[in-house]
Length: 360
Image 1: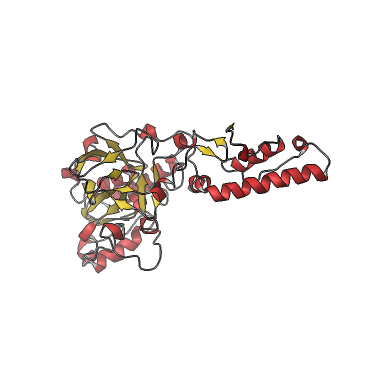
Image 2: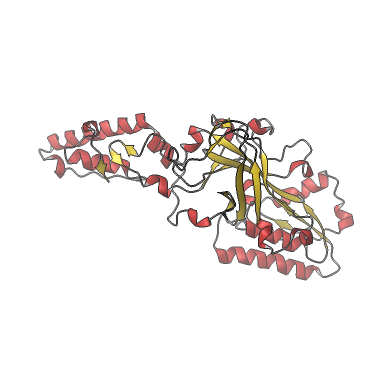
């Protein structure tokens, strides 16, 4: 039974690892479940995929033996998806789960570049506009490719959460405590925790070379061979509290950081201390796009656009012999709205060079 888009690929990996598929009586696989991990499709569609898997098991009959293969990729860290794997593994006839363990590995990272993917890092006044609300709308997590980003490790890599899929009874089934784990993180360097970078790791259970881990090279993972592997990225989780504020998480060697990791449908959530991870920390509004924060943090780009837009509005006003306020500007694909606000300010005769903040 294949769970996930790429799990048929896992069947060949099972064979390569020596799994005797004929002895197991592998009876087939369900159709690929493209929305299983929440990548696409509605909740109803995902439920239907689960129903399809249940129907397959029913049709296979009580005498059939089968194996369950799931895909060890970052987007597989979904509580609903992993619960489905547990349910399949506990069904009559289930002989093996591959990979047999799901493990969240993580590390504390200090990196302005990682922080700048999600927050404003040069203050909240952008080209003279007060954008203080931007940080409040930022999501709690971003996919990252850590090898491309300068960073400093503040801890050793640690296991934040682990689930033995090969032992569904021992794992606890529907027990809520199954999905949460408390851990004390040993700190090795003093600094500010800009993000908790985590990844899915199945360890030697899949490949003794470690080639199936999403661990970045700086944490002992495999070297980057053929550029970015889109299935082996990491995820940066941002603890609540604007960077640089008194809520920033600062650590020092010899002072372990207590964290709680809870696996939810959108992935692992982290919280300080023993406070349960709060999924409500994620804004209810649609998430900001990945490139919004880097664009706003690019001061040279913003200054160049502001200068060009101001000149264009002034030139249009002269050519048409109209006051600046009579010039119409169309902002196509407005994104953050910053360029449109620049045009409105220029039409009002203002400029960011005046040094005054403009509410927008």
